[in-house]
Length: 180
Image (cartoon, rainbow, N blue to C red; front, side):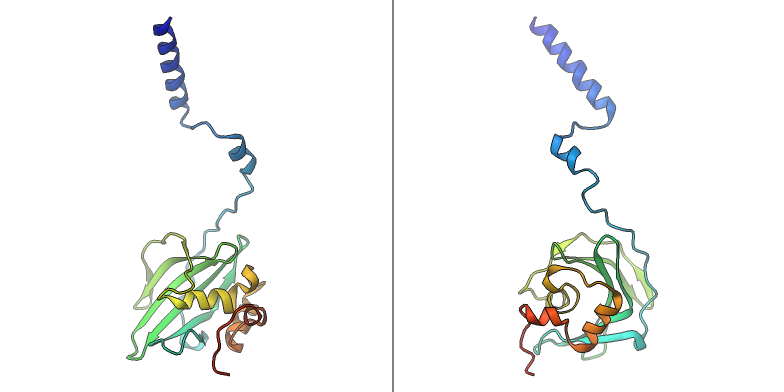
């Protein structure tokens, strides 16, 4: 009897393995189609100086930060995408094409720019840390692109927030003092 059960178990295991799918729970089947699917974002044109809008990060920052307003977009997946330029006092620039998920407070780098070209592989989504060294993501999240943890409605709304020094709802909910 034991040998028969063992053989039956092996046949069942082999059958399931041959299907190429692992059994899914009821919850997984119910959630199918409800989970957001990230859009494939094409790389934008490399940023031009005329399209860069500076935004405030911190008085102690050694860099100046800009978003290419022409690259700003909000996908059907709710991801705010933009080109970020960080410029040192000596004139060195770091350029990246990024996405921000407002509902989860995450950011992702899709590509890095160098000498007018995009390169690299997309990184993983990672949490935006409020007190991290990379405060520019927190500033973009709270002050410009994700007021009340919801994405801006349009690229124009985001560009206006950048030009005005913050989104009206972002200021209302926890902005930092800019000495104004």
